[in-house]
Image (cartoon, rainbow, N blue to C red; front, top):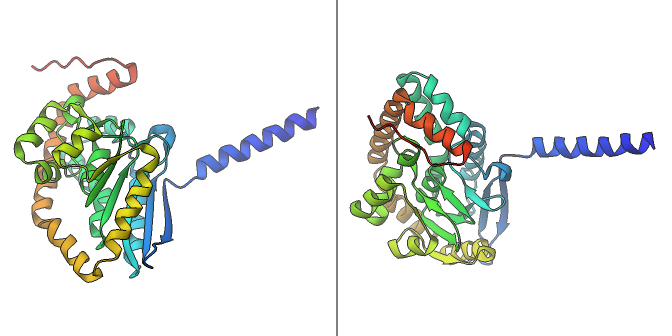
Length: 286
């Protein structure tokens, strides 16, 4: 009996080790019916609803670097493991910003944005397959993609003002370009949640489908793109993504504004405590 329990314990330890060693970003490549390659990058930490950490960002950027070297690549799909696309920035990372200096936080945020927005370095179209909730910086990654296929029932929000900080991850660049300044102001300043159906109506979503069909719909779109001229699609993607210098200015402004919010700190601290305690935050607004 003793040996039996030792055996069970050994199996459990091996399973725990595999979970700990699981890559934070999965990269799976397949061949499209037309012959080109499709890569699927999966944010892979379901227990945290794929909360975005520095480690995940490093893994994401490393996979993008690999994909950039593949001339046969026709499209990339980005999705999340489990029931969420991404819950946004990791709370531990955000809380650490309160203790940092404004200068340190500007650099930290620019580096953090760059890890995930490296997706824009891909010349082929990038499709966000939003399989569940996409909140804050998680939604911003999807907004930086060229297409968004969203599952019915997903909760979506650019909720930065609800946690006491200025938007980041290119939200102030991407969202107005998609929905216009008035609608972007509504979503950013209120931080309210919206649905896949709302996203489709506003022009954020390319399509809204059942959760079980999100990846299939993204793959269908990828195949449609792959049957067009590769060079023409790639050059059109670069044009439609806009001026990199304009994005850089927006990211710098976001990093500086977030650093100011971190320096004040009270609202973010209250919001993070409220999230842990599952209650509404009570901002001082003084």
